[in-house]
Length: 387
Image (cartoon, rainbow, N blue to C red; front, side, top):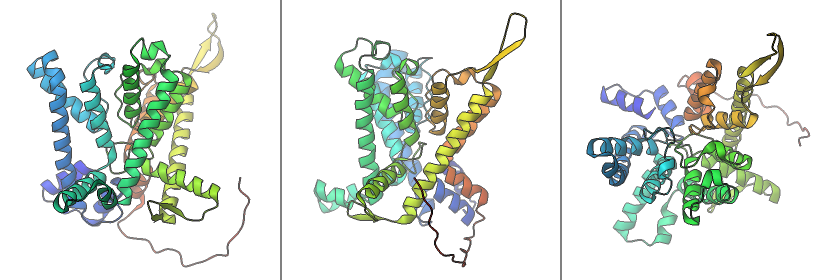
């Protein structure tokens, strides 16, 4: 949507209200103000981050592949990492051969994390930094200057990265087919990279097929959460996850309001988070069912008589593949290439829905640029038993 908006501005076409609604929803903005300027800033920041990433990767790739190929590899993988695309031209094993390379790992992880923070967070951080430098504020004051959205994104991202690293390390550190006989430091580095790439990046420094069942399930959970709003990543987003966790915690404590960082979260935001979760779970369940049905094979006896039907791939393989597609991660248990035509179409649709977001697609289909008047009919409240 950002690219389309940029093209429209370049050719001089006016961005109408319908276009602004779709841009607003795709970038998860609260209002319509500054949409065009936001798109311009996104393009500027994207170029700067990708250029810096390419320069760091060039330190490793140019000596190894030569100037021409090294520069191409550096630019390609910097863009791929920042945009959370996950495509690489290294070979069939992604970045497994670089699993112990500090420069490559840290550079790619940084690009993935920054790309997954979201454009509004960058803008807020740069605005705050300029104010800190101009007014000579301390770090504590700098944190207070950040918006509530940025605080939730940064804290949630940090918690997910650290917890993911700890869980992957705890589950896979003794798995020789995944970690090998590497030192503890390299195992932690591999775990950190896996935790980062699950944020919808798709690069890999370990063999995903050899993960334990618990490791695969943890990976699925983190892929489903994804990155942050208005970023290059998919999933239900970190802020949605944070709001849902806060909602559950406050319900258990018997509190009616959700407060964080001395701010109150409105019911509309909570409702939106619940809708996103419900629609996302529904989409993934339907996709998994579709894949299980589309990948049914016939088993015949020696006489050519059909004796049984069985699913080509295990449930965990299909589960992993579906969530990876919905989260636009790109990690695979070597399933995609073996899917039927219908299975590949399902994966394709999941990636499109996951990238645009279920609410964005709904807005693009059903919104006509005019706000509908809410029904003036009010009904008495009714009670039902849940749980």
